[in-house]
Length: 416
Image 1 (tube, one colour):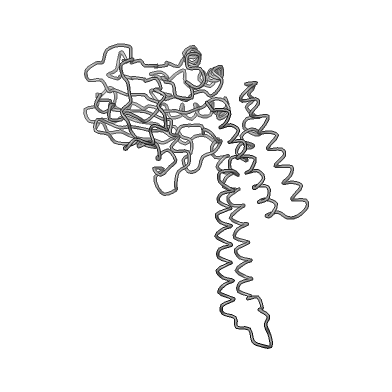
Image 2: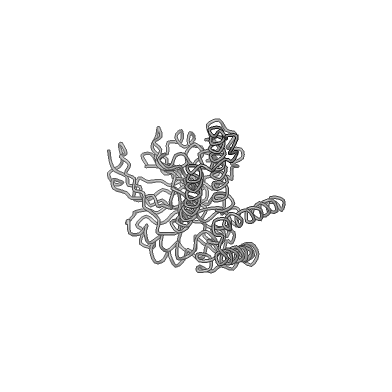
């Protein structure tokens, strides 16, 4: 997935960020006792970082408590300092120094020393302003640290349930009130533990859905981790009336798609890998596409960021039935135009994590994923129906989110 050169560059960047971050903390906490604590934190988190990388990459040994209480805080410490705390502090520090420089120049221009007294007395207002800016900088720094810690904590609480009601014209009466629980991007491994999966499936069960769908990125790094789905599945999802249906995502393909599919099918998840399923007693059809493994590097050059790349030709299974309510499962929210032309009434996708970091007050639409995808979060009305892009359950890359929190989508069909 990553070349040795990229890994070396990434580690070098983190090393430099650690040095600068240490200096930042040392300025904020100058007392000798505080410096000892800072040294301890930096040494401990870097040791944990090394142990975590070894376990994750080479030994494939996982422990829920170690991951949740030790590994993720260490990774978050590293990444938050490198990509959030350090850059924001640097910008704020630059603006503070610029403001003090302008104030000092104004003071010098106003003072006119006499021939008998050439000294320039410091302006009390300037001293007070300097003290205020220093206090504000410290307050801002520790607020940023606190907010970052909350972002890590909030990622791993019970997921929220985003409830959506679709008023469907000409919906068959037998589907009126049908509830679909849409879960995606679980990333079992370093980013999700068995306990967290159990909590998510318990939350889904409480909503009493008729159908549960999993739209990819179910496992990370080690295909055998798919076996951790077994106990939570048996506790919470065996009584779902229409069953649990799943597809694969790009991270499943990075791992071992055939092995993951085999394990999940043995557990009881109906894996739709380029397959169609028609429910025998309901006018309802599911089509699950395998991940086409498109490149985000290619996507960012597309004019509308929604290329028509879906390929329905490998789809096997029973023929289409006239009058069915048709649901498409695809990991990435791509090829929406093709889905509309193929007359799918509901398109369920994930992959974007809702951007994982979104700007407040933008209804989650201004997020990191919006630079690469046209559809990134929430429900989008289409000509033939709707597209739902779920923010998913786990994080990716770093163990925290900002604004876009983990969720389960509960979609209820109503006859218009």
